[in-house]
Image (cartoon, helix red, strand yellow):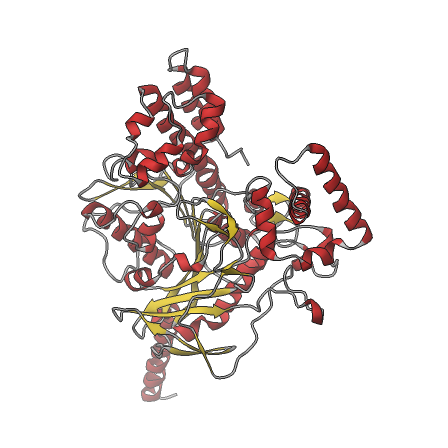
Length: 612
């Protein structure tokens, strides 16, 4: 080869190498998107719409699976089966209206379940809502799995416009089967030939189906299928971690955010016991058995359930019942429980999360885990009648439930009158604190410790906004940084927990900007500190360091603010069950001897999280 041709060859080779490097390092620059509201998916075309201000493009009610509805006349059983791909459609499908929620009870904004089926819910509910900025960029994808104890919630509650436009991501909000429609482990519904459907984890299978649909179709919306982050709060966090651990989540996403997870996987034996309970309550509900139910009557219905199992009529009976009746039966004869994933050994490994992490046999990826300073305060007023009946607190004529009224009614009654002694106030505050401290020990720190033994890029946070010094009164004392309070700071809302505190003040806005900046970075690169396109951080910011198992090493970033600005810092202390319990016992021991038993019993009641 002569020198001239050799130079040209080397130049072209170098250019090719640079092009490949750019392709690998900067995927957002590859394959610009058409920026059209009509998109073409694998199953047909969709018509979206623009937000009111024109900055966001939106598609709602996009099907990712066939409706999980039985057609018994044609012998089609989809209610308790693994989801299937949606049916293709001809022409352009309207995607400007939200889908029905998945079947559930009507639930108030304060999470109070009512005795009525939500009229806006249906079994035909496996849809996603999609939001993206109105531009031609190809962007990372942020998949949101909503919370709600896996028995309520929907995509309708999450407006992803601001998250999409400010954090520069394609937001996908997923609906999935809930309650007994989503998690139901019983041999009457198992074929023995399909391990997915036999797992009983239908809601979990919906999450995997949605991620598979996203992987294959999100490029039509300008999303990058190679940069998919899955996030969720509460039950949504539980479901996110299930995807991290489960073999069915392999290759479907690349980063995870686990916000205030509070449920743990249950054994197949436990799943069967729960299913038996649901069935017996359903049978009583259909026979209009009055409450309270005598033990002898309950025993009769347990026997009826066994007889139906033995004669083969239980499965057809369950498929013939209106889905809403399951929820009505649960609340009539008790309460609607949480619905965690079932360790069937196929969808969820036996032993659950921690053994899978310790073995290294899970879907390793950059991950964020976090919790809030006063998680349990969001629930405590709802237990007011029990605290009064069992422990005689507070000492006034009110119950803790009156605090719920105080928040909603301009502090009438005055929360200081409800908690009218220093001990009443301290007991309420510390009960919320210790329950949440143990929550962090189990659901953040212990998981972060195990993950950090087998992978890097493990990040943790503690959210504190809303407490005294940042939130409005009396919200700051009654709820503070309660469960779910961090959602609008990551998501970009104007209202805080239960739609009570206003987030337009400078301190809240600054904190929200920082948290959304970290989210944007993480979605783009897997590192919450780098990649932010909007420069939303203050000039001098605290770097969010990875979790370190070294004593005294970095653990969690603390997200807080006062009324004027954000207050961000790294904490170097790990919270363990032992340290949390030692702190609680020290506080109990410091109380007046007349109050110690009450202090011990009430704080113990809200220690909901046993060790793994």
